Image (cartoon, rainbow, N blue to C red; front, side):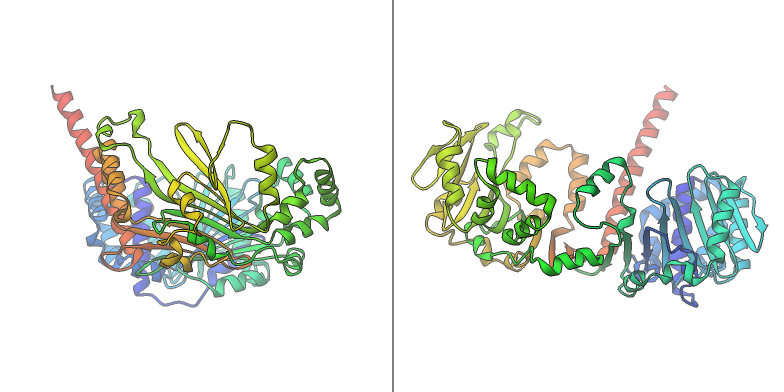
Length: 545
């Protein structure tokens, strides 16, 4: 049996075992060093329930994998089937989270996975049987109170309370054992548990979790040069990322804990504010993708101007540039939004030749920037636009590029750039009667930073759907639809400074979002297996001929 398939089966066994085990919490966290730059965790009990792993027979890829295992190695199949029926025989604790970590990301990192052990004798028996029945050349060794096996640059070791798997490129058995022995015997004070920020991160755990220290940023000559230009300390910042699978979709949060220097800057300068949703009046109600910001240009400029080295550059720019930085900042109000709200399709009669030049689809898109005044706009259109590039119309300018028109104009001190003539015409009257501001999306855009993507294929134009189906192979279109059948929309927005949320909404037909994802993977896996079998059958026919 292939190693990757064996690992998958063992992982499934581990997840099933969570429904039957109990534990003394977090003994294995002592193995993660306090110097780890990256720590991830998985709530095994929660994810197993949501993926419905207690009913594995519903997944075709699992049945297919076990069938092939029975053909290739009946003895191993029999043993794993026995373990699946009673996962506690592995000797592992499953109600505690599985943790992963990485140390020394700046050079050659040590990568580790750790879990708690319920019964060390059962775990040893489990590993012994796996090694013997897979006919592996690995040898179980006992040394200094630890049992371990080594495979190339990887070692799995355990004592009576915990197990750890460590991989390190270029390390031999002695080096790996020395590293693992240190981790297995270290005190709580030397472990990640002693890190005050990690404790906060752990308290907010969800299904999947990630803790990242900014110290992990690559230390190269290039990054060292960049850091000399950054007017604040980049180390001592920590990212907390959490992901949860719900019935409606996948919900995640990301939050930075900043060092004192950065936090002081954020307290002194108000860089952002809520986006002015009044700009939504200029955008059509149909919306397929949008990104936007609400900034305070004055605060950003003041901060840069308060830094001596940056002030000198700004002073030079204000003296020598045809359009000074100070004038630009004074003219900007700070709202920026870019939206895709439609599609310009070729005539249907021209979409019968896949790959032809007339198959190009041009999205209708608009960008809007709020202004305090018209000073910069007037200077650009009167003195800086190349002659002949745009022609002046009644209330806007028009230019043609690659056969498509682009329009721009200033309306109520809002600069609008678009390739949709309906948008620029409606701007004269203050916007569109039917606009995105009158839809439920207005709530998403009522933040300082936001992004939205419409992933509901049913809401896309029929002409676009027909064209894609004609121009994609059957297999490509099937794969595309196997995903878009379940997706609805994705939205990302900032709630507070350094704290954001991501919501990936799905059209789930049955149960939790994770179960739906498992079904999609199962479907794709079986399609791939079927194609491989068809290729093998054709090859066999050719050989027989």
